[in-house]
Amino acid sequence: MAVEDFQLPKSRAANERLHAVVPGGAHTYAKGDDQYPEHLAPVISHGRGAHVWDVDGNRYVEYGSGLRSVSLGHAHPRVVEAVRRELDRGSNFVRPSVVEVDAAERFLATVPTAEMVKFAKNGSDVTTAAVRLARAVTGRSRVAVCADHPFFSVDDWFIGTTPMDAGIPSAITDLTVSFPYGDLAATEELLTRHRGDVACLVLEPAGHTEPAPGYLAGLRELADRHGCVLVFDEMITGLRWSEAGAQGLYGVVPDLSTFGKALGNGFAVSALAGRRDLMERGGLRGDGDRVFLLSTTHGAETHALAAAMAVQTTYLEEGITARLHALGERLAAGVREAAAGTGVADHVVVRGRASNLVFATLDADGQPSQEYRTLFLRQLLAGGVLAPSFVVSSALDEADIDHTVEVVAGACAVYRKALDAGDPTPWLGGRPVKPVFRRLA
Image (tube, helix red, strand yellow):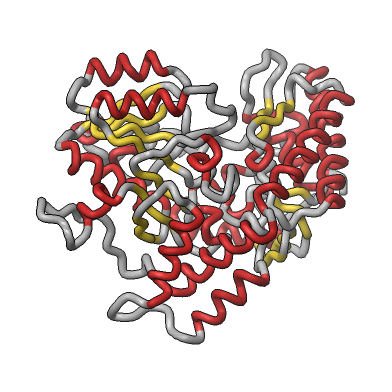
């Protein structure tokens, strides 16, 4: 379909309804309609496998499903069956369900570098719990986060470091410092400058680039030498890098780690895992001051834990991580070939591990451009591809990948026209998309 003919009147009306009752028009800022070309933000009706349908009746091949959480595809039969079975048995009781110990044992068997685990509903809660625990066991107040990773928590200790820091006292923000990924010397300088005051180092163990040989082991040594807790945020790397996460792939064991996203295939479940001596500070068997680690009404709902067990079983039995990498490699090769064939290989750039691909849209000077991203997204949407990223799910098949590459090739041809014209404006169809973290709406 030509982009000029692609209209979403029902989605547009639904977006207006959303803004009238939901601040931002979505319950996650990264899902907001400001992330999409003007008037072309689909509102989803339903999904199955690697496809979703909007309320206007359009079908899309979907990438980055559920902000990377739906890695097996929508309504995956094994997951749905496990969830439905528990729903018929009750989901939340006044005492722990036997499902809680089953899920914990399954998780620790899958991630053997951890000794204890506690479940919750979202990544922010478990990552903040890791920070609180690190502060308690070290007696230190300062938190060091990796500056190259975009998000760790909705809580003040992290959000106060972003442009959306309204409402957060500087006294809290001042306790969070940052270090660059991959630079051990800069991290050591930071720890020396704040000697005896840094409770933990918090980072994604890998991102759009692979860690240099020895980097994670070097961080482990720095944390030990400076007496701080090493925390791996495995929200994205968990399962997608290996069944045991990045720590299982690279062989470096953190003190604490946090998991979510792919763990529930769209169901709300997250996990804080780590060393027994640290985790027990939030338990009932220690003799020191107790840490209020995690205590949530819905954190151990049986259907979500059943989903997590089904996901882990599916990954192990069906080789899902390897499939994600194979699909991603096919997609990356196709997109790069399409970009090269239209003369925009230096402007439409695919980055990241094959199981977690993103794309950059660069202007004539090689700088990131929201205008060119808008142009690119418009063309993808009109071609039936919903892709804020190129993060694959295992439900994709080769036909989906080939269709995506075909649509990308058409988008790249338009991209080339805009570069030749020196101005993408005629192809935007309205205001450009916007970054999530910005001070003004």
